[in-house]
Image (cartoon, rainbow, N blue to C red; front, side, top):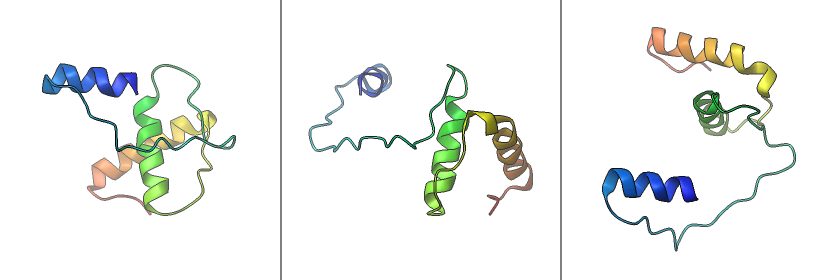
Length: 81
């Protein structure tokens, strides 16, 4: 939450009102990023899996494959199914 508030303040020059937000705790099985530089890949993969309503079955070990999938999606101009 601090990151979101800090980013909002920096970019929008106003406080972010999160009073009506509900924080959803993660499950033990929720994929976890194990470094400080794969956050974009994890964000894309969460969006991809959740939008297709499939279980979150990727891990840090899949990052290279996920990067390739993202790159291919961009190159063909369409999300992969």
